[in-house]
Amino acid sequence: AQSVTQPDIHITVSEGASLELRCNYSYGATPYLFWYVQSPGQGLQLLLKYFSGDTLVQGIKGFEAEFKRSQSSFNLRKPSVHWSDAAEYFCAVAPGVGFGNEKLTFGTGTRLTIIP
Amino acid sequence: DTGVSQNPRHKITKRGQNVTFRCDPISEHNRLYWYRQTLGQGPEFLTYFQNEAQLEKSRLLSDRFSAERPKGSFSTLEIQRTEQGDSAMYLCASSFLGEGTQYFGPGTRLLVL
Image (cartoon, rainbow over all chains, first blue to last red; front, top):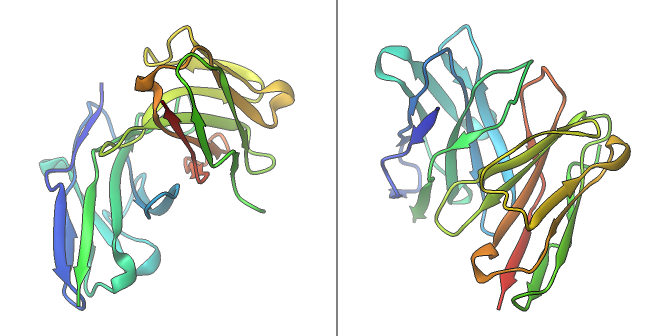
């Protein structure tokens, strides 16, 4: 069974500073990886996804993530954070796309706080 | 495209009562998923539909839970004889088979007193 680990429960970053959120996954086959963001009391918005190809993927709001198969990681980065980036961030993995159950398995999330 | 909508957004009920939530997916999306999210956790898969067929249910979905998707459009999730442990955010997502991206609704927050 697949699993996702987000080792950082809470991260505080100064506005304008760079950000990296860690995600490690466990899955026997080629993973399909996602990062979602959730504002308080809201649903989830997709930031970016990796299915195949270039291991550095660009997303919305200036975010990017890099897939490293050797480290089973899919870390999310942003060069300069804005106060509006404060939210909960979830990494997720799916067993496949295009067939069967594409259900997502999520990590426990990382809460991002931005200080002025 | 108005996105995935869920109603109600909030529900407070007493233990033992039945509740029903509705999800309207993005039109023409043939897959619909239900997830449950408790405080401080990521969403957990409950069940999913392809068109009107319910294809898989998680072990989290006890006999008190039932979901339907008549005519392959909107879906309902009913919880019978609610328990305090059912308090959570219930999220619905839809996708088009093969596209791989699930689009989430705003969720229904349930509080069982």
